[in-house]
Length: 197
Image (cartoon, rainbow, N blue to C red; front, side, top):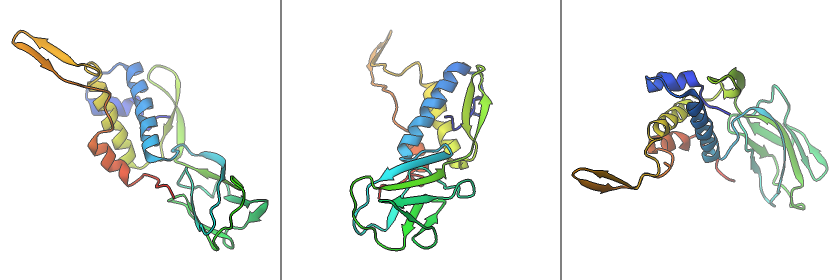
């Protein structure tokens, strides 16, 4: 999964880049962003079992926005099929199911939810001829965050892991490790992060 393609990367870099290395960095950064968001970004059908807690009235799905035009959300709670509009309502943009009544405690993993969630994607031919999945429906902010982080890691690729540099005037000790997400990227991701409920 790629949040950006090589052309976007190259345009922002304003220089030629090793396409294979760039695509590898984009894929890794896209995965790190998806992990940091605590949600899945690629739109697809998912069926997941959830634990039900007594008194709970909200369920946060790990892939959104929900596309109920493609597939209606189904909720089965311990063998009882629940009905949208009667038993629950959906906040599609935030991936949240609001139940009309508090849920009762059943055995673990007794609630099954089926839905289509995530951003739209397209298959493209990558810069090195391989087929890649590019998330095309993501907000511009997420695409920008992936671009910033990918360019940063590409530019710093030669100095990662460096602990000291010796020059004719002396040596400098430094520590350049694999970078965490940039502060700017973290700030962008904050508003898109799925909070655990």
